[in-house]
Image (tube, rainbow, N blue to C red; front, side, top):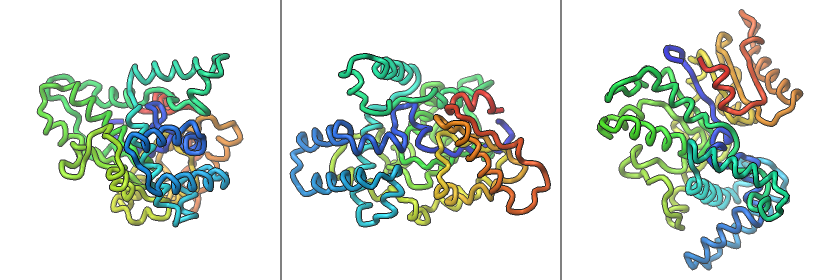
Length: 347
């Protein structure tokens, strides 16, 4: 990986090992009475909120449920008048996931508990999950982090990200990757001044195509907020504007930079990504991928035919002009999780 321009493109599945919902799970949470609505109702009671907001939220839920569209982003893009309340719901769910998120061994333990609950004969235990488990997939954050610090020994042995050889393009609103990296570096190098750790991390490109729910304190001392903040109406109102739908992405100043990254890549990893055409188009993919670039991608839960279809779509997109080299052997799409893909192919 060192010395080789590597770009990671992250979809919702990339955050699933840490308690964040996939796109399908987000729909389940919003539409099920026992998911978002149960927690949100408690929030309304605790904060004595009796305005028209709960009615608007419930109306959105019903229309979204009856629309049978898998992606809430596509639904909001098709229904711009409903988008503000949809962004409000997404903001609430991201902060709720943040509150319940965990990493490393703790995430693995919860994942094992969820699996036992799903396998249980107890209806009560299965109802605690209601649908798809929220902690899914191996701990690729820890794997990648340990690859980044491999061979770096000493109290000042921080990696150098200034050469731009490593970059992330994420379609997610959450801040789990940034939080994980900050906490990992701070606790791995306790004698390094915090300012030096922050300076190191700010050189690492993590670009949010559709916006980030909010910067962390270390990212922006003025506008940033702590991980797992107290949810309030003022907070939700403030951060909802940071969320963009598919056709609002042009308002994002990071988009042009994100579009340029694949052009220079030697290897691209699609992790937890759904390969939706509208999301590929936002980055000009696969057309902007160099023909000499190696492409690896997860297709977790997909069958052989679906995997083949994804792979062929990428290959055909690379052939807008007759290729000077064969590209088929450079496209690897597998029905696996993020950790297994990295263990198998990350140089």
